[in-house]
Amino acid sequence: MSGAALAVHQFRFDQKTFWRNPASVFFTVAFPVMFLVIFDLVFGSGDRLGGLGVDVSTYYVPAIITLAVISATFQNLAMSVTIDREFGILKRGRGTPLPDWVFFAGRIGNSLVVSLLMLVLLAAIGRIAYGVSVPWDRAPAVLVTLAVGAAAFCCLGLALTGFIPSQSAAAPITNIAIFPLYFLSGVFIPESEIPSGVLHVADVFPVRHFFTAFFDAWVGSGGGAGFEWTDLAVVAAWGIAGFLIGMRFFKWTPQAAG
Amino acid sequence: MLLPAAHGTGLKHVADPVISVRGLHKSYGALEAVRGIDLDVAPRQIFAFLGPNGAGKTTTVEVLEGYRMRTSGEVSVLGSDPARAGHDWRQRIGIVLQESRMHPELTVRESIELFAGYYRTPRGVDDTVELVGLTDKANDRVGRLSGGQQRRLDVALALIGDPELLFLDEPTTGFDPSARRRAWEVIASLRDLGKTIFLTTHYMEEAQELADQVAIISGGRIVARGTPRDLSVRDGRVSRISFRLPAGIGADQLPRDLAAVAGPTPGRMDELQIQADDPVRTLNELTRWALERGVELAGLEVRQPSLEDVYLDLTQAATEDVRS
Image (cartoon, rainbow over all chains, first blue to last red; front, side, top):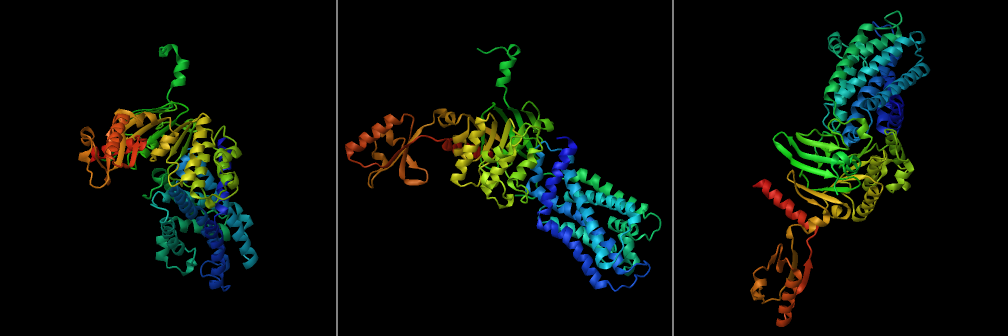
């Protein structure tokens, strides 16, 4: 097989593995849908959020898409790759002629496809259940922002595996790394309710910038085509940092003793 | 007649070892796991690498597989240095790791199809499933297989690329006796397919059953090598005659030359043991004495040294050597 055909071959089986795993489907697909519904139930009064010019339902569609993309990339890869490493699946693969890049291409491809699917699913729920309009005229900005964010968070998730010592540590470390940022960055709580000092802290990390870029592409609050180049540049810089750290610290063999 | 190498390249090629190791050392910090070993593995053989846990077996095999870098020494596997060999080399080898799982979500057949895609000229998937005896389980999820069935899947995944050389690292650890016997049949059938097999094991029985050549490693050194038969009879190893004497008759009443060599069997104080270079003569002397005196020799037994005795002696000696 050529390299590309082999990558497609690997991707097909990574898809099977993903969709047949109840935990990955629940956390990556069902969880964001649940968040969207619950946040709308709890906070959704139809009021406009101060300073943002959107109502709660409109706010949460791009927010939860942001969460879903990070979940399909960063959280999914950090956990599943660590578990596969501890199972010896990565070590076994390295004993075959499978090129390393094909292994990564399959996993990243899987994360990107799931991210796109979540975009479609959450946009559809937003449109049908809450009447949140889909920004067709800003589709290029939406897709580019999603692609940059997804790629960056794939790199960060793969880099994180190098610092997870065992299978049982995978979920706690990944969640501790990401959940506080969802709260601080306005993904869970509308940013109009968050003190500006907290937002400044969140500004250091990529979640806030990815969310801001995606929010503006979705609701068009920045005007124009919806591209937020500064935020995208910060997200991309984090992605490149993740890539370099991953190159240095990624491990193929089980790390837990025993 | 041996031809000079320069004139006999064709013949020389046939005899070229598949694996050749000279002076292999591997240290982890201050710990010297492998202390200078030499190995040669001929084509189409089962080579058993035998040793207790912690002797350096897995370190050595992982150097040969290209997973670990060596500290020093020369290593050639299928004509390449595993530390530098690439994907073309990996097309020609198959590896069963000591411990590795497969995606529990895939079926047996899907797992094998996935790996078949990695190789230029894979074997048939159905053939390979059948060879390892998983035809009935082909459409079951890997997560539902028993430990022994998963191990057979490991062998199928190592075999699907139709490799020339197969590494099996403790392939039957944790098997019950009947599963072990079935696994041995599979391994023996791989040799019949023309594969060279490098088998590590800590079961002497497994080496005795399967191997054409055996090397025993202990404390990071090769302490013995040869065919299983060579090893059993090496260095004038002696037969053991054991028996019990009735109460009231002591070893000192045996004929004088037997009394001088008879001693208690280790671990069984009521039993006497004689190590005999010439068991027929010794046995004759012993039984004649017993008949003349009317003494019953309860539990009389003559044992040939097994590979296991050799192995235990050698590895114990090496362990004591390391400790002293």
